[in-house]
Length: 357
Image 1 (cartoon, helix red, strand yellow):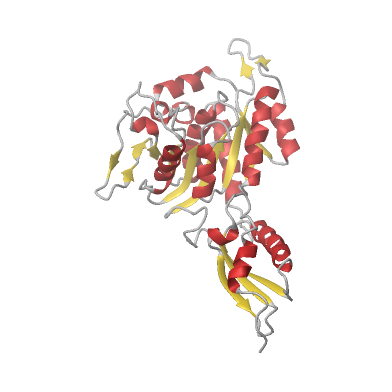
Image 2 (cartoon, one colour):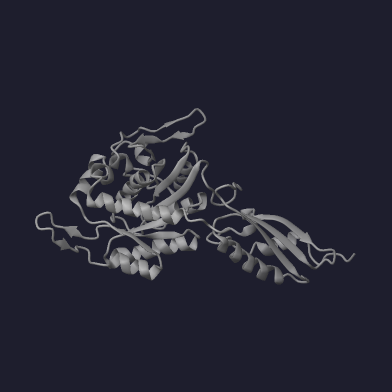
């Protein structure tokens, strides 16, 4: 029997040049290699991978790049790459983004720019999903620096508690399970946090909260594409992201950046919500396009995603958020609430489509 031209350690070293799609870590440190076999001829190689994902393109990207890396190994013959792809809903590998026990779907609500009403959309989307499905819904306020969910749901601050094993018990309001930094700080206390602490707190909000059985967990992300967003996509397996923007170009520029971030980290963009889309004058019913017209629709077409809805500027919506009763609850028969119900129906349809693996 001829001696191998290379060792298993050399194969692993070659594969360290391959990054897991969307991450800076290589596939070896990610722990997805389940077996390496060198044939009796000492030249042919078989590498087996085990991945929990609902996105088959990830396996294809790894296969293409790993094949190139191994073909560059001196003396290599035939290279065989085999993949065991498992649905992350039923597989928990402990590596990379994971589902949360008992949570069926996780949806991120994001924006590239602050001030576009992302938290208003997240709060009303969560309530509308509950109303549309009759299921259980949670809402996690991942904006550690500027939390607003406590106010928007009328929950007393410093209201969260913990179990004996230091698991966080979410606050319940209007039938939803809620978690927010606003429950842990007094109203005027700033969250003075640096990068590592931000990462740890974000992970705790997701993994150490006793969410229980949920049909949907909505994540209200802060604006931008920084530490918190990256921690979220590396910690939990998202079913998709909803991008919130206003119609004007200055907001759409940042919406593109948010969409690009999710694309690079292999998170599907479910669509765009155009908030503050227009204003209907209560006196004469005339429509005013204060921030321009059609920006969200044009951007959705440019990105190749759905325009999930167009939410108008509305006094009652603003008042509902300030008073702790979001508009879907406060005026369920109104036009704005019905638009949020329509958005929720489209989001539900997008995330519950069967996924081929």
